[in-house]
Length: 516
Image (tube, rainbow, N blue to C red):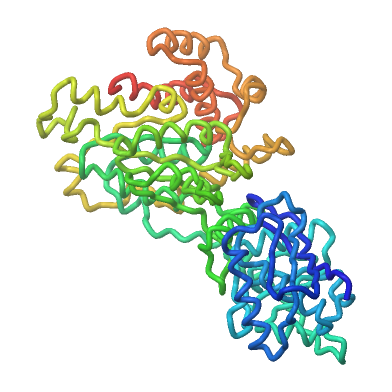
């Protein structure tokens, strides 16, 4: 028979590219040869395919089988090519009618007994194939709910290889059932924000709560410094509860990321809550940024549209912290390898916490610091100036007084739900402001937008001149103060930035000048 051509796809970052499994057979020494830049998992599929075909009740051809995964210059990774290669072999053997497979794509891993196993990254694969005009895809049953999040393409789940053969055989076909999925139940979960930790349960810390409210409203990065036990970690855990719900586009993009990383729930695949990632300070640069011989998303990509919390931030290796600078500025990270280069989104809010010195009590009014001046300086110098410039809010979190600790009245403590409504209102103003501009929050404004939406009156300009001179502010710090002022004005429902808004923004930038 002639060469069979079976359509599938290969992951490339958050997208997938069409791949055609070309299968040919010749009357020479029996064996399987796979070409087209396959990785180890693809090469190992030879024995899986052979056993799956035999254990499904079909004869494996006693011929030389050559499989080309085209295009040949694209690296092929993962076990999802098992099914298309097996269908191609059965097509060349006269068991599958290759003509019937036209218009279909195939993806799935084969077990030795012929059952289909789920593969990672099925959502970006199905989404990309649909965008390229593919009308239907055959895949493992365990992947079906994830794949069905993409509308406009027919999903055919299969339990085992023989089910696929029955649908595309020369005899009377037994078609697979097309999967019908009502995604409304999943989409409704986006509007149900889960608040696990509530700000109303935290005593005092009004300034810290206000700063976190501003950070959430404008998507600003924030650094908290304070003695052990001041409440920095608990405040951070409450932070994600005041962020607005995910939009459907954000949820789908997050689900693609978690699908590639193998972190989704097969039964409830849609990521419906904003992520809160808290890596340990021993994490490697590749673990934080992403990487590996086959580039995979790191913590900053897993925190996309959510929060990256770095507790004891100065304990992270400086090399790890410095690689955060470009993603914090651009919202994307590029991972380059010899064979390929991929881009992953990394638009997150950086939430960092630290002690002010090695012993933790520098500046504390109740416990004396035991560190020397040089020790304190070396400790805080682990955070470089360029990195601090990218952190919009820098606040001190003092320990509570005896009165605050013994005050069990919560009447004056604002709840996370109330704060969340304020954040949503401010975000709505930004949504209208930046309509059709490609950005969502004030923190993402470029120079042109800053000039347009962050105009200062004469009194405010005078204050900024004094601040630039007194605190030796960089150009980047100047821009971030203006963005912060715009967010404070949005929370107040004001059209213009006032003297009070700018003054409040400036107080969140003086921390680094006092400590660092």
